[in-house]
Amino acid sequence: MLDAREAQRAPIAFAGSPMDRADNIRVDPEALGNLMNWRARVLNLDGLLPQVDEMGGLVWGTLADVDPETELVFLGMMDDKAHFAPVPPVGSTAPAMPRAWQVMQLLRPEELAVYGGAKALVDWHARHRFCANCGAPTKPTKGGWQRDCGHCGAQHFPRTDPVTIMLVEHEDQLLLGRQPRFPPKMYSALAGFVEPGETIEEAVAREVWEEVGVNAHSVRYLSRQPWPDPSQLMLGCTSIAQSTELTIDKTELDDARWFTRAELEDARHAGPGGNDALIFPQPFAIAHHLIAWWLDRGASA
Image 1 (spheres, helix red, strand yellow):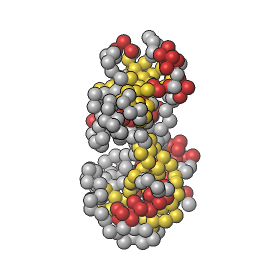
Image 2 (image 1 turned 60 degrees about the vertical axis):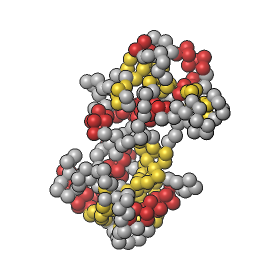
Image 3 (image 1 turned 30 degrees about the horizontal axis):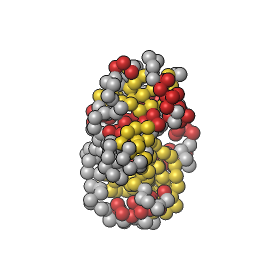
Image 4 (image 1 turned 135 degrees about the vertical axis):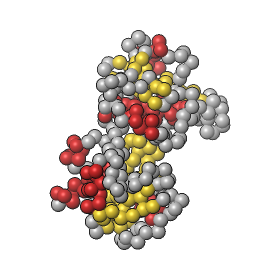
């Protein structure tokens, strides 16, 4: 895992929520109902975007501010108050737009973590109002941590998709790729979903082979990041490549190339805009932490 120095320098975005999810209350309708009073707090959302105050905190309202027909999900307990979030009319599976990232970067780390969990949960509800088994409408239960179909009895649960994101190293070089949607000069760690029947290590090796034609081995887990876009768990790993020869899958990547330690260090020190050749991944992305770990490990070796 990432060492203590890296962990202390910059918290991983969307991790470290102070919210007590209070599962014992979720499963108790009477206890949950008793908490839906004047003290309860409801997250102010504009669709899926949060409102942010001048101190970098989330803005909360009360139950009196919410339309009685709006579905609410129970986020948990914080400051001895029940906290809820409203389900928007529609969800989204599209990547976060620049405005969303601008808003999220205003939030303090612990507030961003609360928002990330809330966003993933309400987005799932907005996109799963009907049963995948029979097509009938579903209703939220267990405080919004489950949806039940009244027609066929199927139970549906919020999904979290595991995604591997990996460093690929060869003789003091690091392999990075760029997707078509990336801004110019932006390169990042390769990534891909874990498929059914795979281990994390197998998923890393398969994704690297599929995307760039490189055999990767000696896979090790480093760190993790919950990613609410829409709802993934990023599993940060490192691996070793057998060779540097690339066969790039152009349906997945615009480009991939090997970077030296000096090239990456120069881009990191250049700041958010990068240098003439490369933009270093932004601090809210786990790729930033993984590459920084690799650079710092070499510097301390």
